[in-house]
Length: 369
Image (cartoon, rainbow, N blue to C red; front, side, top):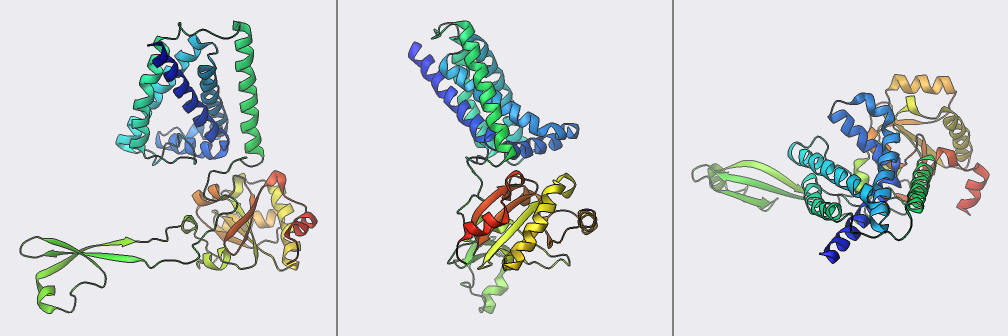
């Protein structure tokens, strides 16, 4: 049984390290997921602390995995491991049954699982945690107790600092679909297919047809069959479709912005009331210089026209504002505000407001236009 215990320890240690890392590398994204949980459970008073809980939980998960994998203070780590797995299993069972959130985010944006898949995953991991807990006294540490604590504390400081660095700038690994190099729309879109279901009025038989390949010109057939439903298969379900951009009058201007064949700057701010105003002032000057070089800037926000007008007046901004969904804006750049450079639908660069470039350096990086 010793090899089973060691295999269990190694496997669950690696899973915890991976899970903690892919969420900790994007603490703001995991913080958004925690906010979804707080809203679902009517714990809105915890929303201001979402980022703190995000970094803390990811650090605990990562360090627990390290302690289990390296056999550091395993008697304590195994208790923590078992408690976390029991909690996660019950939480994901609730998610699977009632779907308070559509995706628990256990692996961040790196691996997307349904709520039932996440629950089944935990059903596999829970026995491994139990094996580690049962055999916790039989694993021999490789160093003294004091040094084990020092190693564990080192990883706590290292990972929490790393996670905060990813919050203060941008994730060092971008697992979202809005990563640099991705294109917002397919080059050669395929035709959309429409499937129509008809039901026989007398026998109840149902038949599905690929439109327009059904006997709509047969009056006898049409008299005996009635339309039931329509199903659409769109092979062009690319990630950029989640972004809908409207101008101040409500017109959809998405295509003109994301398909701009020239350089296009996009500023995103999911909530102007929480945005860094100083960064916006810098962006206003940056945008004016870009405009002189025929580089357009579009500011995407989810605020009301009144809030936009107030924000513009208070900060004396010269920027073109558009509206979009806050969920999409939270994903584009993990910063409020964030800056993104595109050309012909391709994401070229992304910046956190702490790292906005000097315009001269920015223009030089573009080369000959």
